[in-house]
Length: 239
Image (cartoon, rainbow, N blue to C red):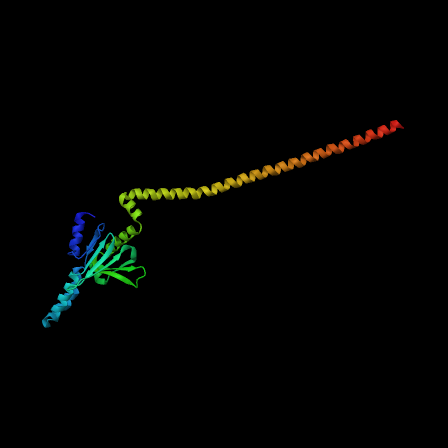
């Protein structure tokens, strides 16, 4: 965040002397309720100002709005309320579980709304930035800071490199995954082909062995009658 942005946030959030930050903590966004939320109060209070009640209603609401401040830093969320007294609430990013925003009919028309923050283990909404301008943008800033605190390494890498480099790295990883997935069926098919070839060679060797045995047995059978005839011839001669 530049110095100009910090000054603009400080102006939007009013005097931040009530805010106590750590050494490595910086203000990312500061603001308060949109002044246009006072329009309904003026619409009701001006007619009642005849009996002085309207002036009290207008003054109290004006002081409430102008003395309410919201701050988003790199470490936590802050809400300061109170006119005569001061009430400051702080929620660290690590405890944030859910961030949502809503807009009424007037808020949608004039561009303000309420951002609600829930924490882990908390009962419902723990903190609300009421009637802030651009509630969607505020929600996104809070989400970015929460993600960076939960994953500091990823936040530093994303902040230190252009978005195109990050996209190129993601695409390279996807290509590698795709190649690995496509390679597995090919390897499996090659293994099956190799196993089939080895099985065929084994069966062929067995068949050749059986044929060899058959030829050997034939030759043996042929030799036996020759021996028998020789024996008979010897007997005749002896007679």
